[in-house]
Image (cartoon, rainbow, N blue to C red):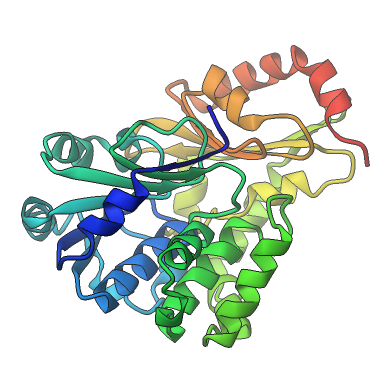
Length: 345
């Protein structure tokens, strides 16, 4: 599959020349990129004269509540009537920051699968499902950058105001680990510079996302780091968090965001994972990170029903925590050679 797909763009441009009712959808457990890209696109489409509404499957982390327009987003799980109404009345639906309908969760997936109008997918994850209109590029660092480039393709960069710039900056910043991941290119930095010029206050955005920790969130981080295990012969580290540990520190959605990167930051480690017990879904949620050429996307797809990017992916396990960790530690011995040659310090 090609790295970049631009499908039906001219037809879509013509379709959007008339005022439309549009729904913009993000994935389940929306992160900074999902919220930033969906809200920014919605605000851009509204400035073009459309009726645009953002719907996400469930609540976003509290550290994103400050984003302009976040209070106008519908949550499918507890605003179901309003969400269903908007979907049923829409002329087209944009799918942002996910590559397959199952990423919205089964309830919302069932609704979207019955939808009779067309979808537009804007996403940077590998192996996207096929829809009528698609802008896919796995080499771009974030969907928020893709939204900027979508606006640029329409010759509408002058429509980006401070609110749109703030949302896009937030999405790019969070999905690049504050611009430190390999996917951050010179193009990314040029876009960031333009967003700052258009009103994104980079210091305030960073403080709102990263410097608003609660006391309990820091204690949870301490617990996670105390659970850190290293397998030096396989250049691997992993962290576990049980439901009891989450309850002990009054876990809130988003509190575990970025913790896996502490494991990856260890000298000599190129593969990191965090295993988080999810009592509600009765699964172990997993985040994988890597350096170099070791693809956690392939690893997760092959073994943990997940996927994502080469250096950042998610997955899940229906086994208990101890059995999941045992499965993981046994698996990585089979990848010893791949891990050995993946990255040089």
